[in-house]
Amino acid sequence: MTRDEFLIEMQDVLQTEEELTLDMALADIPEWDSLAIMSTMAFLDSRMGVKTGMTDYNAMKTIGDIADKAGI
Image: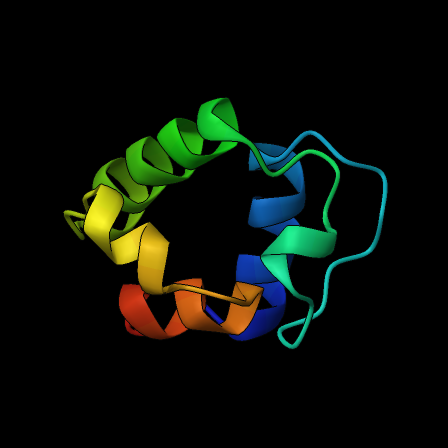
């Protein structure tokens, strides 16, 4: 998966119409809440084979941090 494909997938995961960028701060995304974190965890696990936990998300500040964790 490319970074561009990842951004499109994350837009679907977050159920947002807003175009996402890698440097976008998670705190600036209105849809970024505990449900979005759980959806992101499930997405990374099922699509990328990457297990994450809440401690990972506490350290993540941008969409790019999630992509880095996914190995993209």
